[in-house]
Image 1 (tube, helix red, strand yellow):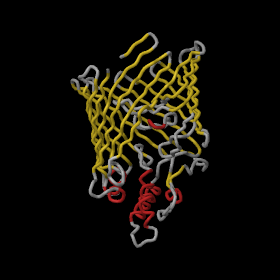
Image 2 (tube, one colour; image 1 turned 120 degrees about the horizontal axis):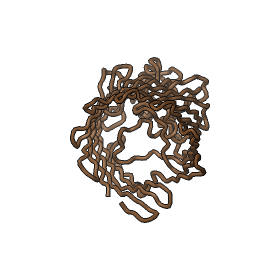
Image 3 (cartoon, rainbow, N blue to C red; image 1 turned 90 degrees about the vertical axis):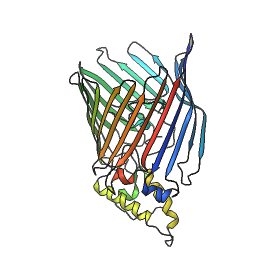
Image 4 (cartoon, rainbow, N blue to C red; image 1 turned 60 degrees about the vertical axis):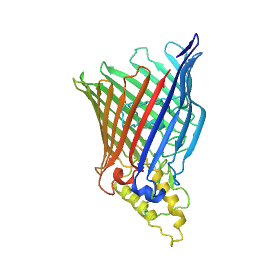
Length: 411
């Protein structure tokens, strides 16, 4: 750590190597059939600190990967990237303002995230973040602390300047209001209202309750007329024969007048020997119902079925690429169940989780972190999928499995 009277800085180096085995449906159509395994290597240096009241996080990063249609190595360099830069100002004893580039996280759950509109890149809240990836956007957060000490009101406005992406939900300017109140010693309630510039106003509510020393309960729900979440034009119209010459993925439902509910209910349980369990049920009406899912699968089959004798054959690859661009770690369907178990054994932190969809296909994740170093972190994770042919996780995800190893060294 570097320390001066008005300046602190924590320097770290990091590296992450991820190997993936592409799934058959996308490998066959979009990749080089001779190479179904791809690699991504990310490494660099970062610094966190504070100078004259400004908090900052700066990274220099190099990304090497061969995850492209030709399976050739690509290198992307970011000589200097400001991950975050902000300052808090106290206007009075009860009012503070944060200005700059920062992450505003209103999440209550872990796997499912109805309130992800504040920092959409972190839609799935990570239980750990070993290489310190930020999801910051330019914004302003004004907080008012009620005299009772039980309630905090937050007004948040962002000026997200990234390219608009309705799949990742980034690039949309947003304004939101939150009230967080402790209604008792063990229970707090959150009320929110939020609007994108192009959307209708939405409202939501959530709670957290420490039921016993071992059990905590939580949940949240958000409701809006219309949704900015992307959908395929063919899925929206129920047309599984659509072959498009332009990108058919878009936020077509922003003003459709339909009400969309996004909700999660969950619990955390800790045993006397320090096993930690999480269980969550997520329901997101913006995802595909059974009819829409069958249309989506039909679209993929239509695009796969284009042959060289068909005059539209040149549209085969772009349409399959657009089909696969909808895929996201939140899933494509409306209902999921997530379970997680975590246990510390000596210097090792072990974890395992599973996300199960309505078709009983599943996404499995296993991780181990070594915590025996005083100023360093080392760990690995393995992700894989299971299910019957034609199911979401077994067939339509872009990878069969992923293996990741990471390290971080602080100075």
